[in-house]
Image (cartoon, rainbow, N blue to C red; front, side, top):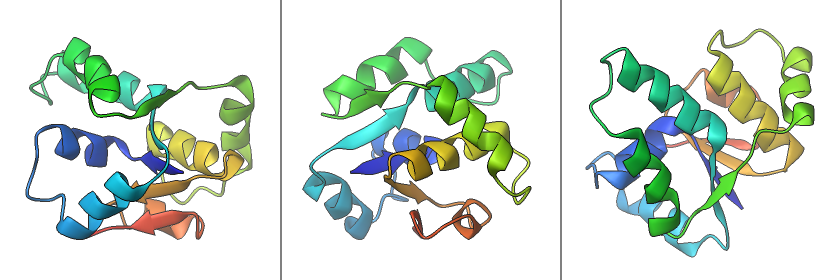
Length: 125
């Protein structure tokens, strides 16, 4: 089971060249690909701040349209953030790491700082 970091999901939706053949194959071969509600929340904030040009409704619809599944944020996921070392200051990245550890899911990210948390986090370049 794969959990996509926010930027990986956004790149996938727009067919970005940053999604390499290797990443694309991992995603297509996975039995289940998850997009966290936290990623939609993060994107909605960036849209509101003018840092992301997208429609949040398209991002939500893109989950199912891509054949992915939504991963809700549970109270347990949120509480696990407190036990993480302070490697990364971004609360959304920390929550995604907590969800990956709780799953356990393999979290695909291009953020090398996030990758320092655990071997469940896979750095893709």
